[in-house]
Length: 388
Length: 223
Image (cartoon, rainbow over all chains, first blue to last red; front, side):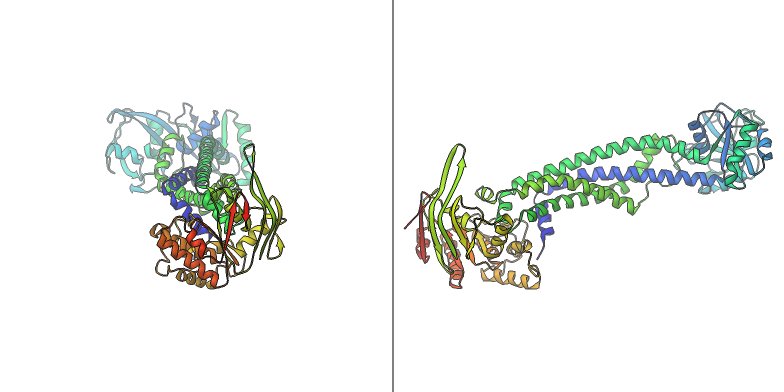
């Protein structure tokens, strides 16, 4: 023998299409809600991971907009300002500085391939430390004229390790030592090369767009930055925490918008639930009257109807999470296209606690939507209902 | 068992006041098998609703097992209906998605008694299904049953809480004569087993077979 739960399930199954569509509304809303939170969490974790992976504590750049600097630190955007690497002497002389390394990012015409390349000059010996997640097809650069290509760049022109690159203002041919596996980040479009080679190409023998700095002890960082600012007021220092905040603020506005859309979708879904259950109550008023006649209390009736909304929202919520996970790659690809910076790695990871929270939230909204129909059902006059 | 004295039932239909029952005096003894007959609009169903504690009289006295019903709270009326009264309706009112067994067991879902949904209850539901001749149809849903089978399911449902009183509102109204006879025979059998049965019917032939006939006209019982 079955219980009240089965009674509620059977009631929903009577109008399968209606129940399914109502559930779909909830599923869409929960899917978006889950994706937004999942993405946000993945974004913050990925960002922290990438910043951690640089092994640097702060960056020194020419004075400019903090978002521009964050962008530079995270994916090497092109800025028109250069630092003189002579500043590294000043930095290295400050007590407590462990490492200072230059980075040069620039756009460079590539007439052979009829495009403009984005070059990223860096101490290539540090790359395994800075980008530990990279999967290289071929080898890391071991000489001054060896370069690494990003995945998209290599794929577009069908370039294999061993291929040669030429730039007009460099008399030496560059050899592709390896291709970086797909990262779904800006790294996929860069040409990575030794900093000295990049400086030659750009005709900036002592130029750098930023200097990455690592200190011996993080607690000394404030003192070191203070000393650096006192020595060179024309420089901008940005810590990795500031980079994180700047990048997070870029994502925050997208998150707010998506969250608002998800909440509106959830409210529409809840109205759908209310409408669907209300219709069912009207259609079943005789049956509800019969139940009251054979001994169901108002609370019994209320419970049966409210349970129907819970079933709809729970199943809708679970389906929404499944859809979000299945469609995660599509969503991620879209996000990577529209966001100025997205950390590498999977953004949408299944977090059981987050999934449960999304479903619980949907159920709470669903319960609120179910209260009125349930109350209405519990107030049905059995005599009127039985008379039809 | 049931005692009505000067029971009145008035309600409003727009601006008009309708006196559905007028000074009704009625005694029903334990084990009675009564047929309530009368023309449409005479007050038969109103009387049945009051006897079934679905509605309260506007005036007069109504005692059930010696307890004054007029003053009962909603929750007490629910308990009284659940424990002591079984309803059978002309339209059966079975839940479409539930099997015969689950439909019969429906009142148990609302019971607060311990064990109301236990093993013993399951045995009782099965026994009731067999008793009304649905032993081979227990797992069928209403759409797979004939009208007579649906009404027999409804009778078993009315019996599941072991009530003292069965109230049947035109139980054969939607059935052919063969099925009507079967349903009447079941009700008669219940009466012979000691149950009190009150049945509204338009079928004079069936009414004549009840132990007692209550004629009602214009809200009044004809003596």
